[in-house]
Image 1 (cartoon, helix red, strand yellow):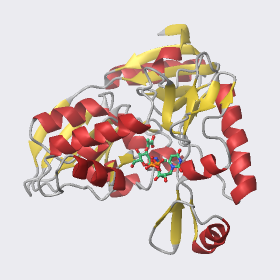
Image 2 (cartoon, helix red, strand yellow):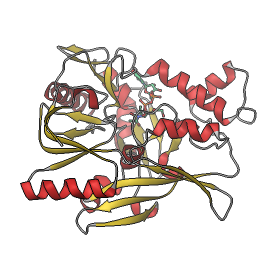
Image 3 (spheres, helix red, strand yellow):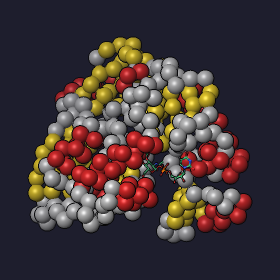
Image 4 (cartoon, protein in one colour):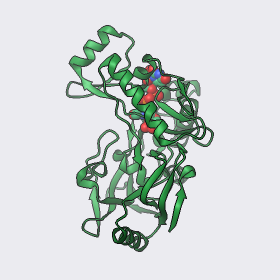
Length: 339
Ligand code: EPU
């Protein structure tokens, strides 16, 4: 365990931050030992994966535990699907590459998403028409309250758009240790997303001729065009979730703003493109000292160098207020605050 530990390099947003204490846990024994020490000293405990969806505040009180559980095991499910059990500390994109290299399709739409397997599970990552929950069989968690390891089925995880039980009161004491992916025995390409369709066409491919590896390359190309590389420009991916509103509210907005970008959901609900709202509120490319809004995509807040978490949150709040005032829609932040 180390004291006064700098966290700047441990999040993709790269804010200047220090934790009172920092340690890594790669086994259950290590995790339990660290948790016992924190309890004995009355330290608050925080968990970190690859920091891809985390805003670290200047001073993080207590103990930050980096989850470093490794592991990659392949097994066959009774119905012929392939089960891949991965440690929570594995880099999710390494798993995507590894499964594709082994000829296993299913994760290609989730290519190039930064972060660990644990982080991917907690926020149910999704991209280009696929959500992680659709490719999961179960997860194992350590329940801090009961001090036991539990296996949770997908149903028990309550996965929804960028949401899982781990984000709620009921799952607050769960630490993800591993995830068992379920990759289909019969693979079909998911190519309905407009950007993918266009790129397929440009390469002379169709949904029935493209391979999983080719689709992965296409997703990587499309993402690289839109999203800044965190190694070059600090960011946490989409900074807000796409808001879901009622049909009545959507209809009012569309009347005033015919170019509004939206997607129809079931049950009379509509999802709006938060990027469109932020751009229309005038914030695309906005600069505020060391933080800003990416000039190629309005949903990405960037650290222009040396920013603090507090400065990032101040800009986020300004954007939330501007969008609320203009459209009556309240944006909700996607990254979690470490502080
Ligand atoms: N748009 C604008 N201005 C912009 C950028 C986009 O008006 O500056 C509009 C465009 O019309 C575009 C629409 O917004 O068609 C949606 O943009 P995009 O296709 O880039 O998707 P997104 O809704 O911004 C979501 C996910 C991404 C995921 C992509 C692809 C959320 C919060 N974000 O982004 O996930 O990669 O779809 O599936 O759901 C992440 O969560 O960190 C993330 C990158």
